[in-house]
Each structure stands twice: as structure tokens, then as C-alpha cells.
Image (cartoon, rainbow, N blue to C red; front, side, top):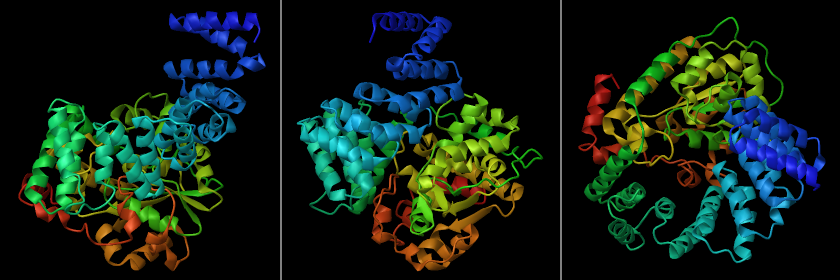
Amino acid sequence: MSSPELALWQRAEDAAANERWDEARQGYQRLSAHPDWVVPAQLRLSGLAQLQGRLTEAAEAILVAAAGVQDEAPLAVAVIRQAFDLGEIEAGLRVAVDPVIARSTQPEILVEAARLLCDQSLPEPALPLLEAAAGAGARTPELFHLLGVARMFAGDLAAAESAFEFCLRLNRDEVSAHYLLSGLARQRPGRDHVDRLRATLDRLGPQHAGTPLIHYALFKELDDLGQDEAAWSALAEGMVRRRRQVDHDPEADSALFSQLHEVVPGEDDARSQPSGPCPIFIVGMPRSGTTLLERILGSHPQVSDAGELRDFGFQARCLTGCLGGLDTDVALARALQGWRDWGRLGRQYLSHTQWRARGRAFYTDKMPVNYLNLGWIAKALPHAKFLHMVRDPMDVCFSNLKQLFAPGNAHSFDLLEMADHFVRYRALMAHWHDAFPGRVLDVEYDALVHEPAVVAQRVLAFCGLPWDPSVVAIESRQGVVATASMVQVREGIHQRYVGQWRRYATQLEPMRARLAVAGL
């Protein structure tokens, strides 16, 4: 690279470091005219635009950078990170599977690229990178933790267990490995980790940030072993400790739901039916059976199960310029309240997700909390199908309580906050049914596990799909499952979790009473 370009780069970097944004931007733009500098310059332009809230411009720049990646693996990883951060998953994935990453001789590059892929629930391209890093002699807790996660998502639970155990040999206090190990199988006497988990708690001490994960892991194992009193004690302690760590404002939660009740159809809603694969949205409370329903649908030859996609919320933020995190909040709700070009938002969502259909006519978007976004999705995508998983209130609330979500679901660490959130959710779903009649099909979890073929036929008919009896044989399916239910759904359809809350009825009574007041 010639000296003039290097000098220009250094001046632009200095300007950016000292927040002289216009000067930095002009420097990077000039560098973009030089072929050897296109990728780093566009990467920086993307970051600047993102910092200043110009998300569409940031995405355009990272797409240029992604198309130009050639032979610098560290730079390629930086492009992947920025592409994923901006919701450009397809572009980031193309870079991640480029040989420039795979042929890197630096294990840390392979591990970082794999971590980014696992964060996007893409374990299949991550696995060869992790195995290459291990083959090159890398022996870090992070590597084997990621190997465990990728193998777990891919369904190789025995290999996942081996990786997590090796991770713990390298670092016995890797709390996430302890937690994930507890969920890989039903624990049995003599084949559990209870003593090790308790020893870990004693060693870490009560102030360690990772202790909630150990308490939740203890609950899972003691619950499997039928030691209900000790199990509840572990869960209660885990919830208290986790609640102290999260920033949850019940009043803000209530304000969001109130804002969403104002979303109704309007004259400016999208009217035309877009071309290409059609999304099927599976919504509902987390732990309501959404993963089970997606596995059934994904067994149909015309449906691709795409998993939990964050694209709608991100594209809504991108177009409105409303910066924020992954969760829908009051600020985004207010920004969309004044939005008018719903067709554009729909096209933006489809352009970022239809590749996941993999040549099939339909694909699922199984982000449960899209129930918050349902009204906007309905306005933007007039042809979209909505399947709403409905589960017994106590069963689903208890299932949320015993699952440590990170991040999100901050209401699930307190019995009464959980109940109040559930009441708001049910009222919002009633509003969507009233506002968009015929657009949403309620699918009862209990009915699905008792009569899977009957319910599946109704679901397929609603989606415009022909009946295929193979859809209920989900235990024979391979492929990725990257949700909290990844182990359960590989067992096939069963009724084991119906009414499970009753084992802890006494401890859950405050939540049951709060739900009963609301008629639930």
C-alpha cells in the first residue's frame, strides 16, 4: 500500500479518535476510491454512520465491505461482526464461510468467527472453524465452550457434553458450561452433577456474578431427581440473585403494552402481496411450545424452519432511525406509530429473510416475542401467516421462571412480575385478534401434544399447505435447534410437561392468585 493512502488513513483515524466526524468521513470516503483500501474504509464508514444513527447508510457501507473481502482474515472478522450487528446476516455469513477465514493459521481468528456465528444461531459453519482451531492446538475454555454450544445446537449432545467437560477441566468455574451441561439430559441418581455444582457455589461465593446460573442448574438437576424442596430452594435463590442483576421497570413494561393497544389497521397499510417465499410467524410466550410447532412445520417439504429471527425489529429501527437494543420498547412503538410506508418496511424485512427459505415456498420466523410486533407485521406484510402458541398460564409462567434467559425476559425472575407480564400479553393478543380478524390462528399446546396429527392438520390448512403425515415425526429430524427447547424437541412429541407446575403449587401460589384475579 502506498504511502499517500497510509497517511490519509492515519489522518482519518486521528480525526475519528478525536470526534472530528466530518473530517474522518471525508478521509474514509477518499480512501474508498483506492482498491486496496475499500474494505477498511467502508468498514469505518459503516461504524461512523451507525454511531450517528444513520443505520441504512451503515448497512450500505458494510455490504460494500463484505463484497470486497479478499485475503485479510482479521479484517474479514471485523466485517462479519459489523454485518451481524447491523442485521446483514446473509452478507456476514458469506464472509464467514469464505476460505479467507478457514485458511487462517491464527486460532483466535477461527474462534472469534465461530463465536459470531454461534451468536447468530449458525452452528453448522461455526463447527469446522472450531474444530480447525482445536486441531491447531488451541486449548482455551472459550474454544471448548463454543464447541459445546455448536454441537448442542446441531444435535450432537454426546459430543457437546465432552466439549463442556473439557472446558471445565480448563476452567472449573466456567459457569455457563455448568449450566448448559445440566440441560443436556435428564439427570439420574449417580449420573448427576449436584455435588459439583454445590462445590462451585461454595468456591465462587455469593457475590460472584455467575452464581445465578449455578442455582438454575442446581434446580434443573434436583428437579430431575425428584428433590422438589431442595430444587425450589435453588430456583428461588437463583431468581432473587438474577433479579438484582437486571434492569427491569414494570411501569415501562405496562407503558409499552398500552402503546401497542393503539396499533390498528389503517388506510396506509401495505396492500400488495410480495413475491417470493412467504413467512410464517410463530409467536407466543417463550416456553409455550413455539419450538415444537416450528419443528412440525419445518418437517413439511414446502417449509424451511429459519429459527428465531431478529430481522423485523431491526429493520423497523433501521427505517425509523430509532436506535435501541434487540427488544421492542416504547421508543420504537412511538416511532412506528407515525410510520406510513408499511410496504417499504415489509419489503425490507423480506429482502433480509427470504434467503432462509432455501428454495421452499414458506419459511418460519419463530421469534416468540414478535407477538409485540404482530400489529406492525400485519400492516407491513398482508400475506403473512401468524400462529399463536397458547399454553396453560401456570405451565407457561412456571416454565419461564425456571429458564434463565440471557438477555431478555427480565420479568421472569419474580413471581408477581411474571404474572403481571402474562396478563398484559394475553390482553394484547386479544387486541390483535380484534384488530386483525382471521390473521392469527391460536394453537393450543395441550391439544398439540395430545392429538398432534389433528392439530397439525388444522395448522397446515390455515397456512395453505397440504397435509403430510411425516410432520409429526419430529424425533426423526436432524438439523439445528438453537432455542431453550433444543433438547426437549429432539425427544419427539410428549405430554411430560403438561401440569408440571403442580409439583410446586405451594411455592407458586402468589403467582397463581395474581393470575386468578385477572381471570386466568
